[in-house]
Length: 121
Image (tube, rainbow, N blue to C red):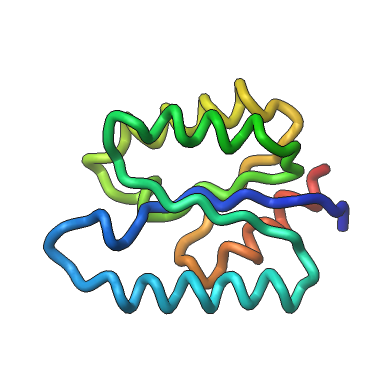
């Protein structure tokens, strides 16, 4: 497997109204533990879908060279975020062209998605 730093971009569970963020926050912590178990360096960027989201993502992508960027299932699966998901994919493509792009289903399988992406490097 290739190595390199991974960026996980996900929704900030505390920024979403109408649901309890605690289970998602716990799943994110479990996912980060999995990265540590695999010895993969990871940065997690939790965002609110607001006017600053694209700027925040672009800044993160250009701060460090990432080998893989995992785009979270909350961004990808939630139909109202389809246009935002497209923007995130294109930001990664433009700002981190050397990075593999991977997708997770839950915060807990983000490391497995990263492993798949890193293998493509």
